[in-house]
Length: 412
Image (cartoon, rainbow, N blue to C red; front, side):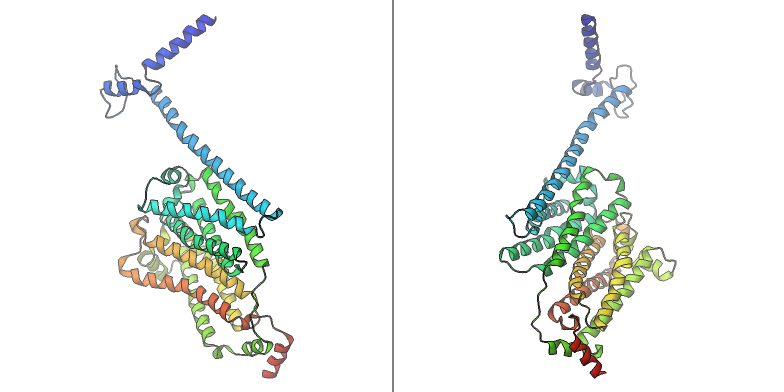
C-alpha cells in the first residue's frame, strides 16, 4: 500500500511538472509553445496553458495578496493595542503627569507618515508607502485623501509639537488642544463616512481599523481638555459689567462678526440644498458651473456639506445669539473647536476641488476659479475671527454676576 501511494504521488508530481502546474519553468515553455499566446486561449494541442492550470495559477497568485492583507490586519491590531496601552499606563502610572503626552507623541509619528504618503502621491518622493496605500487604504489616493494627509502632516504635526512643548514647560495648552480636537473630529468624520458610502466602499479591508483610534481617543482627549482650568482674564467686575451693558451697535467688531456669521449661515444652507438635489435653477447652475466637485462620486464633498447643514448651521445660529446676549460662557471654548473644524474642512474641500487627482468633469472651472477660491477662504476665515475675538476680549462672555444684573436693570 505504501509503495502504491508513493507511486501515485510520483505520478501526480510528474503530471503537475509536465503541465507547468507550479508556475515555474512550465509557464515559460507553455507560453512559448502556445500558438495563440496573444489571445491566451490555451486550447492548442501542444499548449500547456489549459483552463485548469490557469485557475491553479490564479490561486497561487492570490497568496501574496492575502498574506499582505493579513499583515496589515496584524499591524492595525498591534497599533491599536500600543495606543491603548500608552493611554492606560500613562493614566495609571506616575511616569507621566499628563496622559495626553503619550497620545500626542504617537499621533505625531502617524502625522509624519501621512505627510510621506501625501508627498509620494503627489510625486515628490517615491518608494516609501506605495504598497501600503495600494493594498491597504486605496482611498488615500483620492484628492481628499491626499489633502487630509497634508493637513495631518503639517498642521496637526505642528500642533502636536506645540502642545508637547507646552507640557514640558508646564504651560497651558488648552486652546491649542481644543483647536486640534475640532480639526481632528471633522477630518475623521468626513473621511470615514465618505469611505463607507462612496465609490471606495468596496475597497475597505483590515487596514480600515487603523482609523479606529481616531474615533475613540478624541472622545477621551476632548473630555480631558474641557476639564482643564481656563485662563482667568485680568478683568475687574466693573470692566465686565461695563462691557456686558453695551448694545450691539456699540460693539462694531461684534456687529461685523454677526453679519459674517449670517452670510456663512446663508451659504451653508444653500450648499446643503445643492447636495440634496434641490430642483431650483440656482442650485442646478451652481453645482454644474461653479462647484462641480459636489457631484464627485467619492462622496466626501456631499458628506461635508451635509455636516455643514445639520451641525454647523445650528451652531452658527447659536454663535449669533451669544454675540447678542451677554454671559454665554460656553462660546470661547466651542469657538476654538469650531474654528479648527472649519479650517480643516475648508482646506480639504478647497484643495480637493482644485487637485489633479479629481476627475476633470468635477474640477472647478477656470472661469469661476477666483470667485470659488475667495468664497471658500472667507468661509474658513469667519470662525477664526470669532475665536480670536473670544480669546482677546472675553469680558462679554463671562458669567453674569448679580452686580451686572442690577447694573443692567438700572441702565434700562
